[in-house]
Image 1 (cartoon, rainbow, N blue to C red):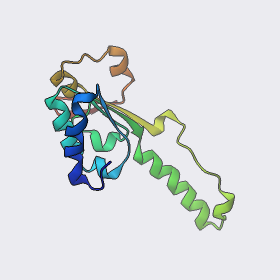
Image 2: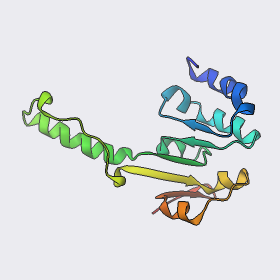
Image 3: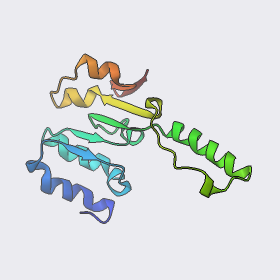
Length: 139
């Protein structure tokens, strides 16, 4: 457990020899120190995965799968429009991002190469963002 981002590196160092990989959810404290996590993990050849593709684009995680915040913004805007037109919030059901277009899969081929990992063509083809030579290629 960490209480602020300055503790993330030390926490990562304390577990790195006991894990095969690290998954970072959308915890703002840890995401703020994602570079420190990746640095520690890379030194031990441990892959890092994330639930937040937007924060992981050039940080060095192997893969990230999560919300496309642009799509979330569109859906949010539609709900706000309903509210501004007078609809009660209690009458608006919870919306879930179920459409695959609302999710991004980012694969960082640079990080995979650094760790000596091969990414299958199937996974590369399913990703809508690839990082190659520190540049993001969007499909």
